[in-house]
Length: 170
Picture (cartoon, rainbow, N blue to C red):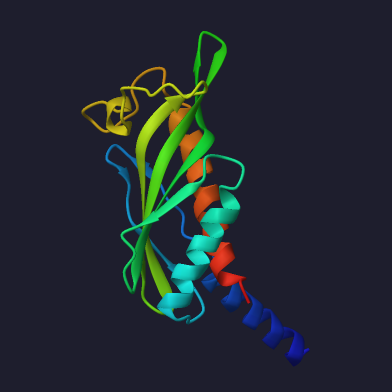
C-alpha cells in the first residue's frame, strides 16, 4: 500500500511539473509565460526548437529561426485556421503569421507568442491587428465572441506541442 501511495505521489508531482504553460489572449496579445522542463543544455534546446519547428510546419509554409543566440531565438511560422468568426450564421476562418520568442534557462524556458499578421482563409492579409478586435474597456467588440476561445485553443495547441517536444525528446 505504501508503494502505491509513493508511486501516486511521484506521479502527481511529476505530471504537475510537466504541464505546458497556458496562454490567455488580452487586448495587447499574449503575455509571456514560462515552462518547466528537464535540465538541458541551451545548445540542445535551440537544436530541439528548430527540429520541432521543421516537423510542425512541414506541410504548411515552413518556418524561420532568427535572432539565434546562445540562450534565445525566435521562431516565425504560419498557422492555418487559427481562429474563426461567425457573422449571420456563416463561419469565417482566419490564418495567422506568428512568432515565438524563446529564452532558455536550463530547467525552464520563457516563451512570448506574438500574432504578427492575420489572413483570410484565402491568404489575403487583414488590416486588423489583435488589439483592433477589443474595445477601450478590454472586452471583445460585438460580433467577435468566437475569436478569443478559438485563437487561444490554437495558440495553446502550438505551445503544448512545443513543450511536449522539449520534455519528451529523450
